[in-house]
Length: 568
Image (cartoon, rainbow, N blue to C red; front, side):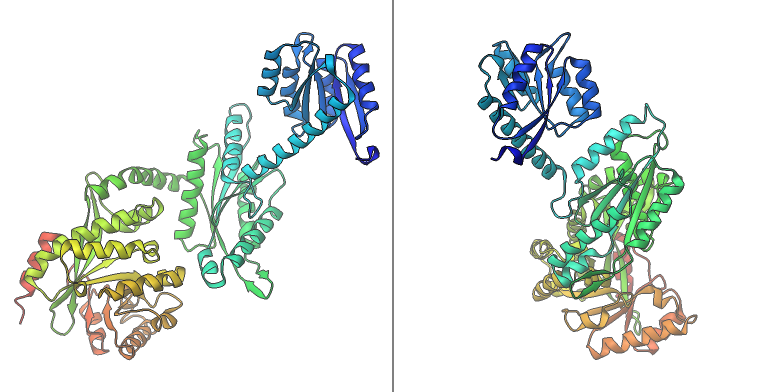
């Protein structure tokens, strides 16, 4: 290498003048680089220089009066973290060598045999080793796709901030960010476009926070930001700014995509809670509330959410046990022929009767089953219990069809196929006696994978029903692609009968579509005779709702079936 091609800044720390001058002479006569040498005569002098300047390499004598070179190494790490450290000593003591290398120095050299070649080689190696170490450290702490901080480093920084709260009166905020319906982008445009969106999103996110803040990709389409030393007012402003900026279109070659995000925010310290895991969970709870409220917005973890969070945390700890011990069981709502009032089917609905809290809303515990990856366990439990119950039901009415709901994640997972096959075989039930219900929103969020799984299920002889039909945005296109047997009119339309002419028109359109595609049609949420009369008059043959019967326990369902079978 041409000596003039590289300039290396060196801090030489040695309290012996002869040794300092000798090492300086060796460096000056070096052939591989030009060394800009700054000399410190003791530990304190070195500390001052490290605070004032940046050095590529520190050459440090092991013995520095009352201190050692390893004591100085700690200071170098604090002020010059990119600096390589080489320890020098005039003593041939092996334990010093071992101590130094364990402490993280780049090399350890004996002054007795030191020459220019050895010293320059050590400096070159140390710089290269430090560079490689920094690169490895970067890769270990950053997301390779977006270059943002990863979950590990994010959590470390958050932990560091929480530990400082005891000493400093400072306030910070966490933003937990989720890209709305990002899976749809991957499904429709491919993962290459999806990855590019994540990169552009990350760049835009960094452009809209301060350099002192930390932005991280936690995984998938989930991101988080630590806003350091910020007031509540400015944290809210920051969240609103990110929401607004992410609404601007993302342009990738010839594709223009609109995106929205949901954000959960928590400020800390709050309620004397400084636990990083709890704080992150608070932000996650606020994010969940934002998504549940319609997405495209942010929610702040306040006292109301705190109460909900405490209740939900308790539910989370009890949920898996409740599923395994079958405290969550199916209740059955009858489906009727509107003309004859005869029961033609039963929909199995998961119900959790908590020993202390009473009935817990299925909307709540099903969402947590999804979140905690317990949904497959819950589906399997409801299937087994429904199958066992159905044997008694079929003895009363062999023409019944049992309808079981499956979630969005289940619908796009081939595991549901194996689970259903096992369920049919184990319970000795004919496939045509079973109907699986999926919501229309599933087809929007998981289109391609859902189609393949539903086709496989349909090939077994199982009926497929689309629940909440008419509330999504892709109804017509998927009617031609999916193996659908039944459409279920969402109760929101049924409740508008007699009050909202537009909703009545929607019902008439859905009925006409079902007839054109030769699909069975069931109206949900029928509560009044006038609603039932309108549906029957317009050609809807089947329905369910509180007008006929509420969801019933196993024993009550048997009684209901026995009474209904007597109807002529």
